[in-house]
Structures are given as C-alpha cells and as structure tokens.
Image (tube, rainbow, N blue to C red):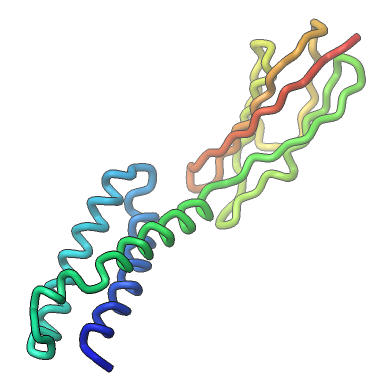
Length: 168
C-alpha cells in the first residue's frame, strides 16, 4: 500500500479517536474540544512523519494528506458520541380537570440512568424528584408551558417543554 494512502486512512482512524477523546475530555466546551483536536492532529503528524518521511516524495504531503478526512471524522464522531452521552427528556400528560398526571417514563439515557426529574409546571410551581411520575393541580384555567429537565448519572441534562391548556 502506498505511504500516503496509509497516512490518509490513519488520519480517518485518528480523527475518530480524537472525537472520542474530545467527547470524554472536553465535555461541554466546544473550544477546548476543538483545541484538543488540532493539538492531536499536530502530534500525530510528528509521529507519522517519523515513521514515513523516508517513504514519501514530499514530506509536506504528510501534513496535508488526509487533513479533511481527519477533521470530518473528528467532527462526526464527536457529535455522535456527544449526543449518545446526553439523556433524552420525554414526557406525556393526562388531565382530569385541573389535576394533571405527568409521566416521564419515556425519558432515557443510553450510557447511564436518570437520577433527577426537575419539573417547572409553568404556574410558578416547581418540583424535583427521583421518580418519573408526578401529579400537579393547577388553580387557574389558563395556558401553561411545562418543562421537564432530566439529569443523568454523569451530570448531563436535557429538557423538553410542552404547552398545556387547563380548562374547568
């Protein structure tokens, strides 16, 4: 196999590896993750240069070859892994007049479990619970925006909001 082909496919694999490290190390900061990705690219350039410089015509090709593939695989793997690490907030509700049962059993986390359900009922009342089911009674017949924020075992959060119309 040609040396530059090896460099190209190494860049794809290294981009995926960098995406994994960005997900684990950068957590919630895009700039630190991007900085890590660039630093990782430069470091791996020197490793590839040391291994393959004698096997290519122009050593500058080692730096340029696969740079697009590296950053594309970095971004795609980073976004996919980052989205898998976050929980998903899902809830339904059923009402009987002004008393509403909220059900967040559809909320999930692929790599852990939900440890907290924070409810904002839209009427200046809130609740935090470890259980996905909760009952709330509204005083006034109005339109409300209900927001559920779930927190997973790693501390990641996700929210969902729905409009709710309370009638007499």
